[in-house]
Image (cartoon, rainbow, N blue to C red):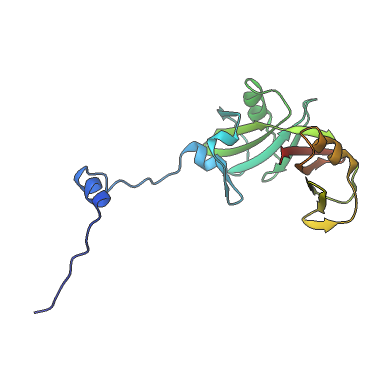
Length: 187
């Protein structure tokens, strides 16, 4: 006769089993999970200022990302084919004024979920780069251009950082030409 040892059940597993909750499986992510996970980065509900659902017929693909500027211009950053995101932008703008960044995901058919958050947009004259990061702490300062250390300077970023104090981190991502989305954090 063979020896057999039963796996010991933890107290939490026992409580779940007794409550009948050990068999529950979530097949499909929620609307916020579907839209909030983008390029492998999970975003929490607190990262967004507004969420809306809207019918938008004629959009290709299942996901897209866009930014809307103060003047109403829409910059489509990630979409499949030619996308007219007017219906999505109009729905967001009932609750959130530009400028903002939005991520959208098809839920079913023509129904889309859209998450949007405010952004700060500034004009910065810095050629040949897509991302700038400036850190200053005490007497140390570092500028990174597209992730690489740089010996150059970015006076516009310095001025934006100094608004929050002597020590700061500024990250700027190019939206279009000399328009950049800027995030400033005090250190």
